[in-house]
Image (cartoon, rainbow, N blue to C red; front, side, top):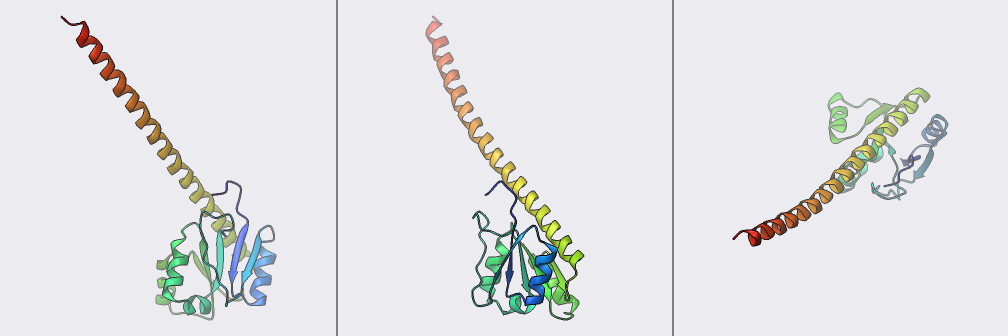
Length: 167
């Protein structure tokens, strides 16, 4: 995983007005828009993995369940749904239960977009910190295993030496 800040955002099948609004509200980030006909699935440990994906609800519901599950499985990439009208509260709750970070009504407001981008960036930092801590724990465990093996050897050596000194 890259150590510098990830500045990449993806858009899946965004309308031109949504794309303009997102670009203007998140100018310090790079927005890459994918047409509805060619939507890739992000891979967390790859360099070109976005930290946030904007997806219109109509595109999201049009995905096959396998594609939705593959996108949801990438926990380091946050997903924001752009609502088409007013969905039923239970539909909105189901989206959020699936792991969608947020759902925004149209038209998009600059403050809402900025808030979501900032929240997703913060979550990315937390994910990276947890990943680094897990890696450190793994390395510490490996070091402790080696030290344990060395101490076992020393213990056996001293035991054998003391046995040979006893009459």
